Amino acid sequence: MTYDAVAIGEFLIDFTPGGISPAGNPLFERNAGGAPVNVLAALARLSKRTAFIGKVGNDPFGHFLQDTLRKEGIDDKGLVFTDRAHTTMAFVHLGEGGERSFHFCRQPGADEALAFEEIDSSLLGSAKVFHFGSVSMTSEPSRSATLGAVREAKERGAWITFDPNWRPALWQDNLHAKLTMEEGLKEADVVKVSEEELFFLTGKSELEAGAEELLERFPVKLLLVTLGAEGSYYRTRKTGGRAASYPVVAVDTTAAGDGFMGAFIGTMLENGLPAWEWSDGELRKALAYANAGGALATTRLGAIASLASHEEIEELVKG
Ligand code: ADP
Image 1 (cartoon, rainbow, N blue to C red):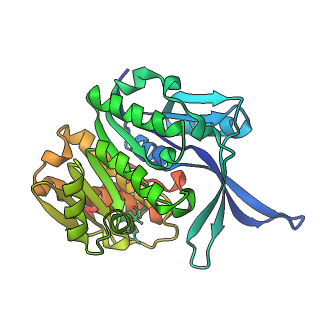
Image 2 (cartoon, rainbow, N blue to C red):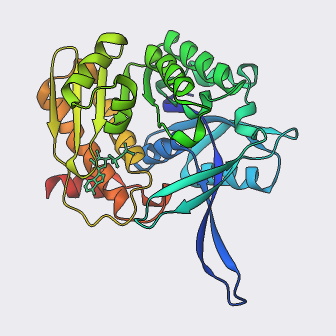
């Protein structure tokens, strides 16, 4: 069996406040969380064959997460269950402007307990694209598992895509965060960051200067920078440019970056050639498609629930 994309990383339950019960108690919405799975779900909506590698507790929450993968059409054969740790949870705090912050319950959580030896190695040799983030690199053994999997998938021919997905609350300190993300940057072919992450990683507040520095310091072949409502920017060793996004009524930006990344990886799989070898025209077209994937994800509430189909993306791109 071959897969268009395999991803490794954190996988958890988000609890978000959601109204009041008839008896007057606060209600919480329960959803699957974790950027790598969101990216796979975005790809599955584009009819790509995907599989996930991660670890959950052998508890009702872990089973809920397995059901989520199955419902989304993501192969769950790389999902490991454990009796020795609970499924990771996060409580979501909604700020006044609608921005979300997360309070994690990990003691440690099952997703952090994934060891390299537990990974189904057939998944590392069967992926055209292998995707990872840095959240699963915050602690051991999931850090070594993530890096080991990425290195093996790369050796066995996969294109490596990386989204650091930096969330300050997750890290002991900024130095630890930076050093860990740098380990990811050393392995990746395609990297997607937000402007905030680019500034964090390079100290450069100007987009072009930050992109230049990142490509100078790391063997990254294509850098993508998401710019919210402004769209996105790309930079390879030969060329660079921007693509505007689409005017939409944004209600919840959760998973916009994952919708963007999933759609971009989708175009790379369709094209067949690695994106860092494309012409400017091809890159701009792929960014337009990815921007539409991101923009559509902002028009609906939730993470996986907000991700768009190929038809919806095409319709937005064509206007
Ligand atoms: P992240 O910070 O998670 O990487 P962004 O919030 O920048 O992601 O969103 C990813 C992509 O989604 C952007 O590059 C853009 O193309 C699209 N997008 C996000 N917010 C909007 C918006 N308000 N209007 C239109 N497009 C948007």
